[in-house]
Amino acid sequence: MAQASRQAAWEFWGAELKRRREEAHLTQEALGRLVFVSGGYISQFEQAFRKPQLDVAVRIDGALQTDGFFERTWRKLIDDQRYADYFAAAAELEPLATKICEFESMIVPGLLQTAPYAQALTLANNPLAADEYIEDTVHARLDRAIILKQATRPLYWAVLHEAVLRVPVGGPGVMAEQLEHIGRLMRERKILVQVVPFAAGACAQMGKSLKLMEFEDAPPTSYTEAVYSGNLLDDPSVVKRVQQDYDLLRAAALSPEASLALIESAAEDYRRCASST
Image (cartoon, rainbow, N blue to C red):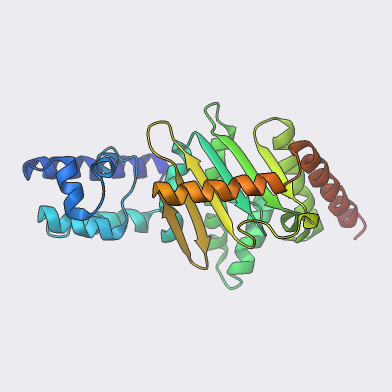
């Protein structure tokens, strides 16, 4: 399902929620109390700004006595999208963000990946997968990166551990192209990137990844990922703690200028290695 049609489907979901809530003579706050979320969240669901978790959709069916309508529709929309269930909600929020901050300790963030790099990662995780699956997964990842090319692109700030530069995903040629791509985006002033060097020692969120997103008319969220699972966190106290961790990472990192020099130096090393083989 294309992104535009998928968004239209979520808008239908939200419109139905509003219609059936009003038929039940419930305010957004009253429904929120019944399903254990705030009235503000009900408003965001109705506007299709945020997608509810499955358990919330189930509770909405119970509160409004809709015979599983919202759960069934939720499952249909999730099945139709191109991202893993645990990442789908975060992927839907990326195009709406005004600012995205990411930290990665081992791999290049998805929004910055080139096609060969993404393909090498996908093959590493799915060595027996069909070519069609690999191609669809790579295209889905590259489609997400379109937001960095738009005039209304979010402010994008990534902090990468130096290990991201040193693990030769796909081989020297792929890594050279990948790091050159990041360097080019930095020089075009489309992104900010800092590198936490090995010399910095232990750092916050070591061995993990995190994403912070800010929005024009909604509170910020954070997303963390583990093995085949992800958590979209919007509790203000938790998001504040994640923001503090990100500040610590930026403090431990090299300046953007020094980071660019390190990235381009690593790219040159890979390019020389690729040309000598």
